[in-house]
Image (cartoon, rainbow, N blue to C red):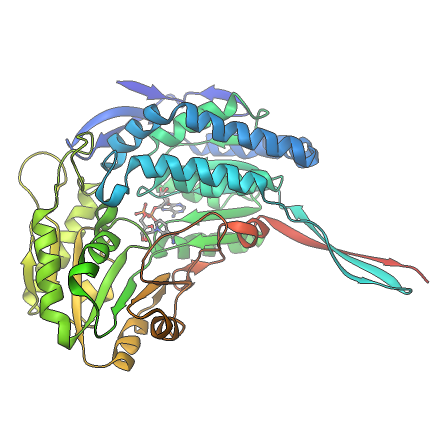
Amino acid sequence: MKTYPMFIGGRAVDAGATFAVVNPALGEPFARVQDAQVQHVDAAVAAARAAFPAWSATPDAERQALLHALGAALEAHTPELMELVTRETGKPLAGLDNVGAGMELGGAIAWTHVTADLALAPEVLQDDATARVEVHRKPLGVVASITPWNWPLMIAIWHVIPALRTGNTVVLKPSEYTPVATSRFVELANAILPPGVLNLVTGAGAIGAALAGHADVDKIVFTGSTRTGKRIMEGAAATLKRLTLELGGNDAGIVLPGADVAALAPRLFGAAFHNNGQTCACLKRLYVHDSQYDAMCAALARLAIDVRVGDGMDPQTQLGPVQNRAQRDIVQALADDARACGGQVLAGGRARPGPGYFFEPTIVAGLSNGARLVDEEQFGPILPVIRYADVDDAVRLANDNPNGLGGSVWGDPALAVAVGRRLECGTVWINEHGAVQPDAPFGGIKQSGIGVEFGRHGLAEFTSIQTVKIMKA
Ligand code: NAD
């Protein structure tokens, strides 16, 4: 079994202790990573701090070229990295609607190149006989990146590349459940980047907390649960660290009356079940008009029964296991609660016996807001389908939630846009759900987060503004 090192100051580092990473399709360890101590966090932050002056002063074009080289390294190692992603997350190589490890690598590569080409040119606000006023962007310093287990490599890229692009240095801590592909990426990156520009520490929540609370970290970019995000925000107060928090979602989709059920059902199913529902912006609550409710529930249940569930290394597999046992237990508890409060389980509803953390894709009818499965983020393969009587009611129910990441409306585009603009969420999709792109800002409102990622808006979050006023008279 291979053991992966950390990287601090450009060197591979062993912590003296390691922990196992489990393949959720088999329930067995397949790799080991370093079990960092707080002293490694201190060393990584010090290495990032030492590398900051030279990296932030590196000419823009040189930094861009190095980031494109990282994209090329990801491309060159795609088969190896895809396999590591599948083994650690359980997601299939291809997957339902081609949302699998291949997409994770493709996305990581695309985001790297697109972000490398972005720029934040100085703005001129005034230039007259009295004065010239310019707005410049400066890097913040040392960025701590803390990532979750659902899209580990792609989310690491989402954090690291814009941070480096704008001249910051980084200490990255991946999820303890899925640190392997990220460790390999950092190893590849350290053959390209100057020492200390990108550092890696591996460990569980205590190491994340030590990094997030470190006095010499200037910014934290965190993707994960709302609960952890709140803790990070508390810890950031002591030194007023800048924050980007991409937190939980409980995205609603509204199907407008008159929809073509047969045509929409597979697309709605894909939006809800790709990566086994373990995507922040999966469709997590589906509101369907009374007139089509029964037909839509039946179509979704048929798709859930027919979808191919198995080991993600099998190219035929569409859905893999839930990524870890604790998450599968959450999904089981939500299914049990749904039954107890009158929900009808139309497909699935049970963990699959045998090795691995499999759960049958599950469709639940007959619930509404107030049931746990509707109000809480399930983050797994179980979808509540909720009946509504009129569109105003659907909008009210969709907004009746503390989360505000994404939302979608399905139907005639003009009407759907008008309804979508009323949803309380950071992104609204019309006739799709959950698709993100590297040039469009993405982030949550309400308790789904603070700030955005991607595009120029996302890049700006890794900088501070310096206003320069030059008097002429
Ligand atoms: P999590 O909050 O349990 O863990 C995320 C990371 O935080 C891990 O690396 C973990 O070790 C670390 N951590 C744990 N406690 C910490 C602490 N006290 N201080 C600092 N770091 C700590 O989340 P998860 O279960 O890995 O991820 C699932 C969640 O992530 C879901 O809620 C999902 O919606 C959310 N998510 C959001 C987005 C988005 O863009 N909004 C994207 C992906 C996932």
